[in-house]
Image (cartoon, rainbow, N blue to C red; front, top):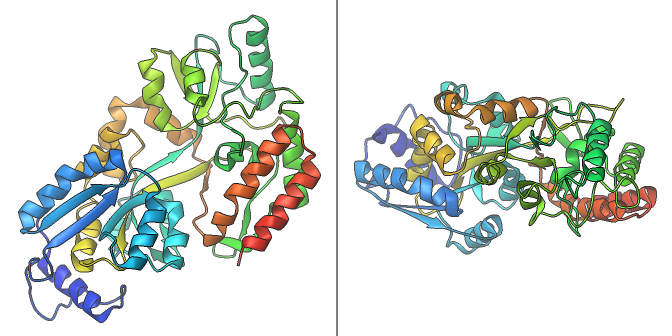
Length: 415
């Protein structure tokens, strides 16, 4: 794909004016080559995405006479990006999760992406919603993901309709010494808000309310309210001093491996777990995470991975062109899927791969009523207090006082 020179000129003019967004790319003042607009594009991504993006980035550079460097940042990519951006040493493009957006915008680290209406319509609607903040699109989504229930069909041939059904089936398997754990849902010593969220919502809890426009409202905090107390009572009943289904000993380091070693029949995880499950030669199926009997539907978070344009990059015009008109191609989306199988956000790419991967449709079905993971800055205050409250309650702490205290802590951190 060749760069659309007129678009580069208009975006280059925007960069010179330091506006970062807006403008009319259909009416450029003059034509200019990509080299004249700056000849180097630096992209940051994690290890897996770096491997997938690199050949496409190099092709983009070769076709347009510019140098493209794809650099892997293995740890703390978001934090390192914000710090580098503030120091003027960051990349032009960064690849990461959509729930970074609120923090990145608050820190002035990313610019809106200029997408035409027809480009937006080519993506899954939920994915576009996820990368939209304050009415503007801040990233190009390439994949979306959500949790589901993965079960060993040799041990559990039928999908449980409720958590109570799952617990009953798991207890029978434990009594027969076929498994050692009822459920592999990662908790760890500090909790895991992401993985417990489906059960929290089924029991009536919520994090943030929504405004009239559907956006999350940081002023309406659900943590600490009566709904959250009732939800944590149900979660605590599944804990170590209750049913023994949820345990702090099951963490991010062993939940998948406990399942693949056939020590439990049920695993709550995402598409990233499937490769290990297949490698272990386990017969498996994927279905929605069951909720509590008589409760609401369990709603997992829906997350999106996206490309962002750095607000303080040295070549914003080229970055806008690469993100808006190159990462929106099915070829790149399929390559990223092949690097790590997560459902592509681009409809054309999903259509290409779903025929050979039936798991994609099952994950999508499991997440069809999920909630977009909040990308508002206030979400950063949720993770640690909520997770620690979860771990404490699962360990036997009083649900009412524990989640009420967590709510006060979170409220105090939200500005």
